[in-house]
Length: 140
Image (cartoon, rainbow, N blue to C red; front, side, top):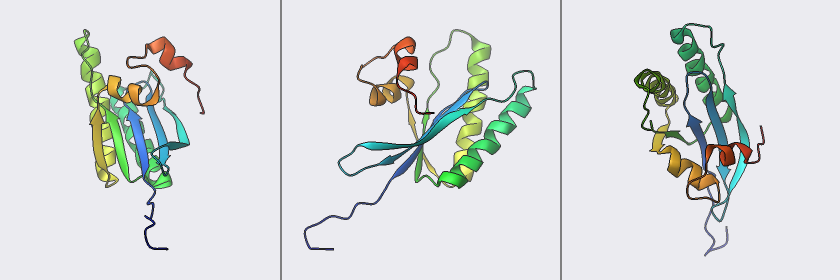
């Protein structure tokens, strides 16, 4: 490499939006200049009628498989937001714990971000609404 040129080492990030009904994920590669290239995204949606333990098991194993397939360097996961429904918050916390465990077992450093900060990074708005977020162009 000519002197004065910096080498660029690709950083692949696996982002996780935890949930017990649908656990969303996205994989991007950082490009020179700080932009990102979409690699893959989707949702893990175990059948809702299955017991919670079985749904969490499926989420765990699918996240492990995705980490093995795409080999990210790091993971990013949304933190739990304030929820008025205590039961929903507990179930979300369990799904989040399973995602954290899967990423730890995959050997990844995990960075945690608030839902607002995460969505702000990927949208033009400082506080995108759920409706606006859902209309964001999907590649999956």
